Length: 389
Ligand code: NAD
Ligand code: MG
Image (tube, rainbow, N blue to C red; front, side, top):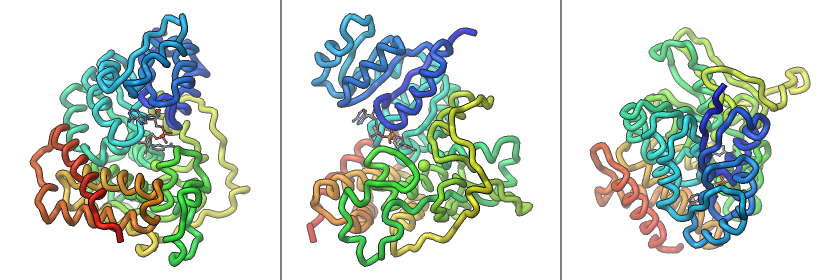
């Protein structure tokens, strides 16, 4: 069998490392085209050399020399900067992992769609900020977009072979994050360290804090709305502390199809890698008897105001997703810098959405990449300029 050409954007992150773990187990099956990273040059170079990538790219334009040195005489090409990232996305590949964190993943993902292969989408910001554009470009270039976020992979799997018109609603589960047992009154005091540890999933720092605030779930609800073309009233979320049921699809006959599995991103990544087939994956199997119970409860809106904001964003449409995501990223930056409290993040994101709506810069017809990035910048500035209270 000819090896499949694959590229991994965000190869040094949590999603990237899990992707490369699967690739390293079967190196003959893959011909690695491009691997990208940002600051972690040593890991990027090591992976590129071992997997004999054509090119290794750091998005940090100042790190080209470091990367060249780290690649030594390996024959792997080195490149750096935002332009190099887009050029890497232009190199044809059959399967591309979109595993960069943040809105920085949007432009490379859009470029990769152009060669009509498969884009495995971990970068949820792409769907939140630019869902209609992603879907339109995928259709235009004949590319396949596969969800990698575990909940969306679960929904996607629960939809296989079913009639989409028979879907009544989808239910996205969430663990409730690292602070779910804290009294609501204590949440303003939570530090980045408190919010940065997750009960079930081992992920990057930003997404872990976003889990504690449920901003991550809010993003995922918007992502589900875009990916599966579902109106907001057909999307729900429920807290499920064990993180074993990843999502459910309810059909018009009352059947509820749940997707269960160990909390290990290699499942969703491997499913997207081997789709439409299922292949053996090195993930733990669930022992139902040992698990004994599964708990579910509704999220408390006072504890998780981000969830309500997600539904506002879905109803507003247009640039609301881009503004929401940027404000959320900027609020997280301020929280990490110790400038605002944990609970101020949702308050400030809501204020930015209000300002944008009031000033009329949420509206746009079929926004393109430039308009989306402009809304992103404006939302960040707006958040930074909010009065500190
Ligand atoms: P991470 O922080 O662990 O890794 C991010 C990757 O992006 C790294 O390779 C980093 O070098 C690169 N990067 C960072 N800033 C960049 C920039 N400005 N330009 C280009 N590259 C940059 O993040 P992660 O947890 O792997 O998450 C990646 C994406 O996948 C996010 O959108 C996240 O929401 C989504 N996701 C992650 C998980 C998970 O388990 N980690 C699960 C579901 C979805
Ligand atoms: Mg998820």
